[in-house]
Image (tube, rainbow, N blue to C red; front, side, top):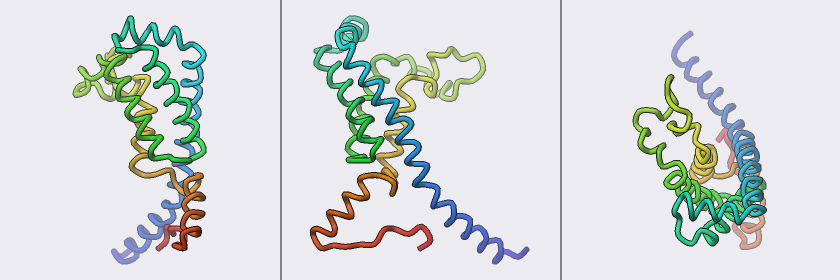
Length: 177
């Protein structure tokens, strides 16, 4: 097999795989967005206990206000990510909330960031980043913030509607182009 054929085959395979990015982003948004939404909903229904934990154990100022803000961001942000509406602003809000969660409830994780990121053998469960409770939501928020929600999201439909309304009709991006 010569290099030209190999290059052509690789280009075809790469273009074909581009079609999978949108279903993958949908799966990521739905799976972790739904889980985040349920976590936020649970916090809303136990706000007194969450506020007490924020204030007493984590020493977060204004614990009730911050508990409501965290619960609302998780519930509303998670729901928006599931349907793919206002995905990047929702992802930014979730990213900020999960970063605060890392810095408050899982502060020990950052002490082992350089050595135990992937939970090597012998690592205590609470001392590795990828098994930390905020990590999946934090990582999902980074993915959606950087890559966008994909074509299988309400953002795409709203964008098409908006461009038609203001007269700037543009065709959808084509992975093969």
